[in-house]
Length: 336
Image (tube, rainbow, N blue to C red; front, top):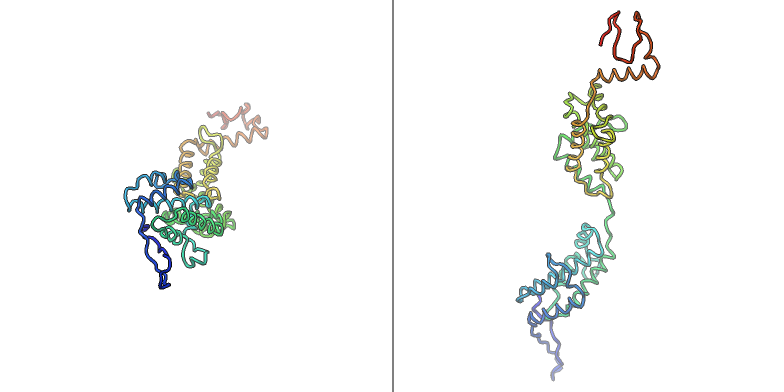
């Protein structure tokens, strides 16, 4: 790539015709010395190339082929360093390299093609400083004109969530109730998301459907819509698990919120997030003691009697006063 020199113009001869002869190509040793000098002058020696410093790469040159490879690596590393200084996000760096040049001299070419062309323009014993500065100047000028993509957490997260639901069709077909009372699938809810807020709402609906489905399985419920099933799930959510400081519904809400797509979390790992939600449900079921219906009825009745000061009333045909809720009078026989 770098062994052919450009033409050298000689003085005009007696016939007044300009004579052009090719200069002898410089040896790779001469080129290497020139490149090392340029790298040192530009303080580029400590930049990293494939886990090696630029200085180490140049130190490993042993022949013309390895020099050509080293020159390409050094030039591309300096380009990468310049691009990274202009764009913090890898996505923007990639987009910039693939974008069309705005320089009329390079019309119709991408920045990648232009930069490659500049690298290849080096000839035998070229002015490496001029070539590298050209690369830096071009990159910086184009980067300043490049329009960065607007931060948008919707597109990547919506795509990731949609792909997950397509791969897990049973989850995708779970039903949710919309605000207007109509029923639809979680896949349809996600498909309708158009901005960050609506995507967050869609994610909440998906998470709720997954939580309900997981509770049905872990609680051995026949369905999720009957009054009995809803009552059991409501009881689970309303109480604290053993050792917990907040109720199960708050624990689950915290897990869902921590995994909600947002500007701070633009690339949600849906499978991991779903796994965390299911783990939270499983833990709630395993560590929560649910009272039987008769126990709940007893507690509710006792609470009512105490709050309404009816606990001291005397039952019919009995001379004794009901003490708390320990015994009940049936005729004249006391039952434990």
